[in-house]
Image (cartoon, rainbow, N blue to C red; front, side, top):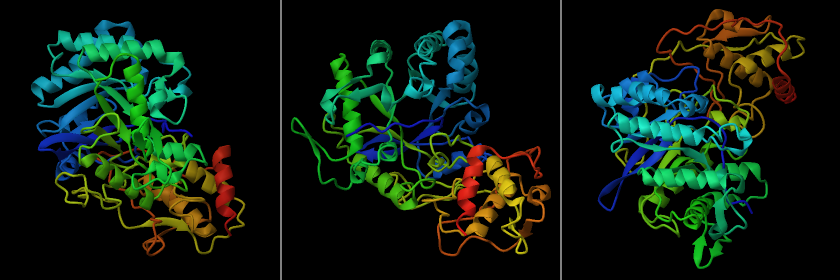
Length: 489
């Protein structure tokens, strides 16, 4: 049985404050920015504060976001993308310039409470085939040296958000955990460096991925409300995969001489669309269970006490790569516009209900749909849908998704509207030849989970090139999707 849940992709995280034994500890969720129309940073910062969120983790050091966080009282972890690791590893001067621009200037003159620098993001993921093995540790060392030179060594700490595949176990029991053999020596060196400099081990754990990758994985083991066959590991009982995964890491740390190393759960969550197991009910079940599981400060069988974690994620991201799966664009506890997906107590100030984003501006209440007079036998239909879905988000279509019950005409309308909205409702984006029309009647099926979106207004005017349909062939993947969608009828 696999006990490790691992996840692929890039993403931005944040911590939500909650009270345990009279002290404030962090619970996290990611604020992603890989969206065609991201919410303005000032609206997101207000959303964080309205929900009592006290800490945020970024995957880069975007100046607009950091400026919005100025004076907010929200603790920040800034990130360094993997693509920057080579230059930072090979030049202390480059590291010093990065720290000056992205940390020092904001801490000293912009009142941004930066607590961590995240060097890379899952750089040792096995799917990356060792691309960043030689540059991550030197980059970490240079960033640490740059922080010390800037007088920030005691205030700002370094870490590396790592995927859970950097460790493994020889059985289902966490006590057999150790670092992956091919990177064991490197991991021990990194952990020692982090420990010597007061850093933390940051790991991303995804029970959903365990279920997604293995059809035989016991579904209830991914959640927190009961598993009929708990694992007994020398008297320590595991009835959920999160505890087992966490303690597999602890075993790896203990075996290599670091039993007291601080651990941050960099990402944990559940998607709401794009897969049979990704839906609102499952996501609410998981996130509610996780919040309850950690809110009492119980910890895990091997390490009792509070857990510092980051939920993934805050807001859906419609421009993320779907190479890992269509669910990648649906991790948010909020939809793209800051609307809550379900009730969730963060243990802070929201009293069990997520507070929606305020001040969001929408485009006109109009949609692009398949014309009533259009025929499904039109020879240009497949290419039109393929073009729309290859240039917009259609991951809510297909088997096991929120829009799975749409008929063929509904699928086409959804694809057309997604393209139309992501192109800011420009009239040229609803001119699929003899096929499309604009309507003021919401085409969303009543009472269901399938929603035809209306796009939010961009914080600055966006330019979309080639937004009129052409006969350029769609790629093979989307033509395959199109064939599935049109086969509904």
